Image (cartoon, rainbow, N blue to C red):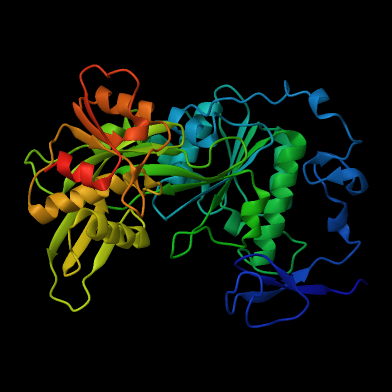
Length: 462
């Protein structure tokens, strides 16, 4: 009888160690290394590869073959197909790719199962689709489908948590799309540890991904998240899959944002917007209209900026509040923005704008729960801060974007013409933009103010 082997694996990064230690030397985290049991060498698990391929000639992404010239590889047998939702397709890079593995994460109640159930019911009308539920019973899923008024006459549903049984069912029905909800409850009989452990999640995900790639099946894995919003399980799980997307949304808002974190088939920073309704998740074709739902009463400290999300511009309102501080160390709070960048921009405002807010509390917020990670929001943020400090309103028909450098210069940002066109489409008549983004020909119906220094931008709104 083969000896049982063990290994020590970090829960955060997936690094392996020969023995236990308190800190992971790769990611630096403490008390994240746990002992796992490995299957015996030469056991029955060593021969499984899926798709009828023997282990001696099976690779992770398909059967092994000799080296080929890159241009001779045929791509006609891997056409993308639509999921039925344009916003979902946008985040995935243009549609579903056969043989791809997609990890869908999100907080409890965000709508992961609802979105995937809607997608599978739509796809089942034209192709074979299999939905594996491990956390809910078949009756619970059927009740949700009936409540959402979805077509239920084509989709195959199965309640199972054993990975070998799941793959056996997939080999029998041969679905083009397979959903496993969720990967944390799936287990393998060949691994002596509880479901949800590092070894179970890693090996089951590898088994399912290998099957998907060898058979050309689109695989959706639903994943849990931790307290800080990151995907639970070993970090190596995110390296196995092709796409990692996160469904975000608060309980007090009916809107959900679907954001790509990893995508081998498209842009990684795409954003899709959905609305949670009584009929399930509905696409929001024009997200800018949501984020620009401004108050009817004009107020100081509010500005509209144009950010670039993936392949499209997005108009977002940014708000700032400057108030006298009652503390010795004034607060700097940024919601939806980077905290350190706010402190840096305040220093630039003092040095090159002549405005001292060192004794003031400064609060900044991006309306709608959007997270702005690019630097094109710098100029809009500073002008909103100046507007709040002076208690002077900015024109409601003005849009602002531009990066602010440490020496007070206004740097151009990518896709400036597309940002202006999006603003003009929503009725904005004025724009403050970097001089490097100034269009060569005048834009009909829009007064463009091109600036190269922060002082020029402040003078334009004075």
